[in-house]
Image (cartoon, rainbow, N blue to C red; front, top):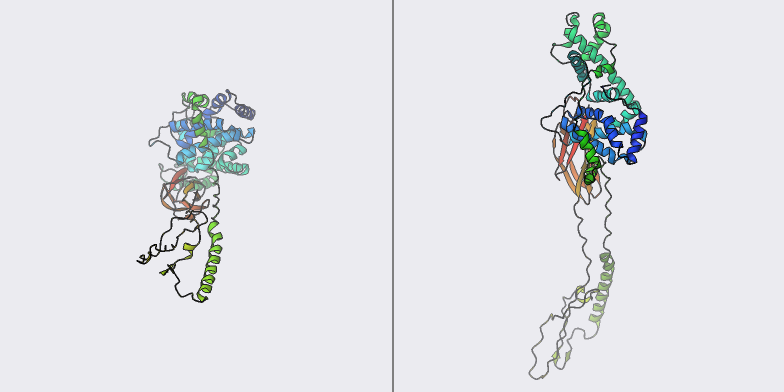
Length: 471
């Protein structure tokens, strides 16, 4: 198929085991066996020669660095294509494509006349992008249902049903384009159903023509209904693998000084880590423990002061040596009397000025001082530091909606959507505690979806979430 060498499953397992064991010949052999196929697949997804080459380069480096992640060597082929597909979709999502794309030249070995290619191309355009990809992987790349399921993220049964339906739709589409191109003069209904000769056929028109062909003896004999779908795809060209790419891949894979580059490339394919829950700090216990002490001491002071006022002569000032004694200020509070349980006493300060010494007294009587001391107050708890907003992208597969997840890391976060790019719309906002998550519903705004596309959702923190879709 497509002039590619056939690879049996036993060779897949042997190559996977050799790569896992660190065999230096494993990656060169994988490259020689799979690089032509994988480059064509990258080129189908990216439509640019250099972008496809870079995607294949990074995919093979990731396969070498993450070979230990494959659960079973028998899944190697599907996993190899899955890694390659993820790398291509990542590049499309993050706009790592040139403004002007340069298609790769066609590979040698494909022989088909231009008229046949044009008809097959028109028939393929009637299918959805997901159907074309499934047929390409199943028929040209020879992936079985289990391998195809690994690549597309579906069950093997769903993959089989999807391919069978795509083959049926391609057969109908090919019959329709053949009749529309060659049967207008023989059957008047064809022109009415197909429209202008230079107008491309869409899915609805092909459906009408297919139903007409099934009941029309003239058009039924003209359409080539027995042509195998695989032979139709065999007429389509494949992209030629750049000759210099092998040296670039093997140099990056083996050079000791490029170890950091290899790890960086592989890390891009790793799923984002789950956010760790932030443990709230234990509250200060000093304040709550001292409050009952303060209350008890205040009650004792009130009782003592009341008893003191009831004693005889408590309202008269007592003198010593003809001089009055200073009375403590009535405005003293509990903070002025309670000793500090941690700090040393400060130097005394007088609350009332000392009286002028009497002329008849040689030595003035010293005035007692009221000493202010600091009490231990509970330290206020520091406010929790704000966190950062982490966002993760989403993918729409056959739907118009998907959900972007936002998570607060390291502390609370206030967030809101500030805009979008591409054919998507989204809105929302709110507040998240540390470790909490929320979601934003993203809607594709195009009424018609052909192939695949990408967009993004921007947030006020500066973060941006990628959104991709395939139809």
